Image 1 (cartoon, rainbow, N blue to C red):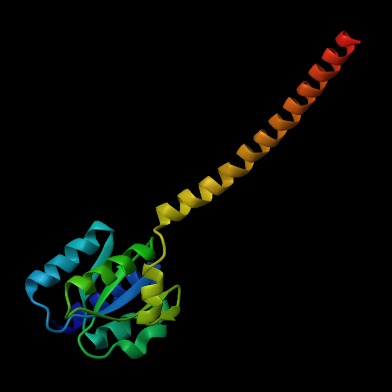
Image 2 (image 1 turned 30 degrees about the horizontal axis):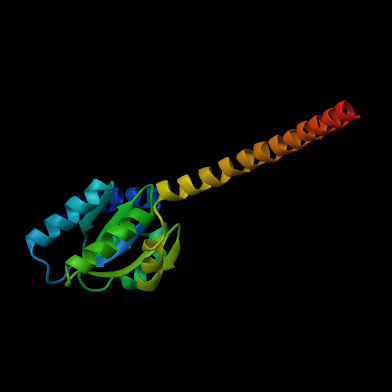
Length: 173
């Protein structure tokens, strides 16, 4: 790659890294093309960019971005997974891929400038997906009005039973 192409690449990568919500560094050493294609296709399904990048170019591109926090991990063969929205799905997908592809390793990651090691990424991957969390919040929000309606309905029924008892008592007397 000549100098102009490298400068263009660094500029484009810097723009993508500035927009990214999270990035994950992956060690791809020892992977064949079939495994790399599988990784790319799995990550593409969840709108995650996956690219092998030279460390020197990645260091240059990560200047003035949140990736500066994980710059010490730019050692050895690196590939980067970039997500612009959901941060849990890529972590889950990468953890599942490391189970399937034994030579694939996760080095580190960052979410909004906060560096994460492999243990943090494992904990992130164990979280429910965004859709599941939204469903849980929605069901919790829906439970409150439903409970209130039941309580109000119970008060009205008690009042009705009281009036019925008073009516039957007066009719007997």
